[in-house]
Image (tube, rainbow, N blue to C red):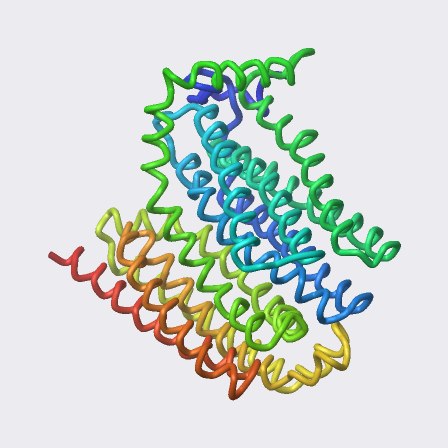
Length: 449
């Protein structure tokens, strides 16, 4: 089998260049959205369920250790990923073959591990927390390699393969994590279990999918794949300039993603320093419910992005406004329902999922849902700016958001503790919405000229 399926001829991109292949007609947007939503929901659920397992079988401090490891490693990994998947998925002209993306990702992932190790030593973490952070960093490094294959699948609109990989990874990781933690109660062994599970999914499922697309599916498929990869390594002198060009092309997106990740994780840094790992664990458990709603919002925004871009590109601002207004309305209604639910049932929800210690923070939970409602609106406005290719405008906005959030956390946390964190996030989210509205106004003004 040399193709995904079907017989329509389209352009395909080989390991280091462009080839012609037979491939199926791309699935419908609705089908891709359904697969994307399903994969993200299950994968998001796995991350949330891990926190529930740690809270139920462990302690808030263990939850805090896991949350701190994620907070330190995630921004570094996201930055060094350089958002290559987005560049790869939109490389319709085949300017760079798959091998360039893979080699660059392997190089940047290695640099990410060096940065993570440096940050650990600089911050003075020792003992178990040091090992947990380092091993989680290795796990996320493995995950970043899978992300390159996701970019290849997305390039060919094979979204079901991405979703199935995420589902397999999520369910297997959860099972392995629960089993190891139940037996050992040791976060180090659980983290190692994540590394091995994600590595297995990468080798067995993701690489195999790449082999199918790259027309290497034969008796020696893995041998041919590795041969092509090492051939690229041995000829880096001829490709170094192109790899540098790819890195420079992706760097602005990498910086934007880094700022977005810091925006999410800055409160965690202040909580860990000012209140300790226990409070960080409680906050992260509450925030996980906030973030779970964002999975649906992001999936809907991603599926609406092509249509927004198409209407804006055609100059049909009426349709652009109408769709954007619908998305913002959906965000407002969803956020309002969330606020009402946690206002009436928040304490019961927290007790059911986490326990009495977490239920005592119901006021923080309500405030976080207010922040979530604002965040959902800001996300959809951001998709509007993205559709109009107003990328650079969001960099200064995110810098402002991060600076204000850091100042507010530093001021509010000593006085109001976790409620102070939630208040800081609400104020910053409101500022971000206002800034996004200004950018959207600029989008309309530019098009009206």
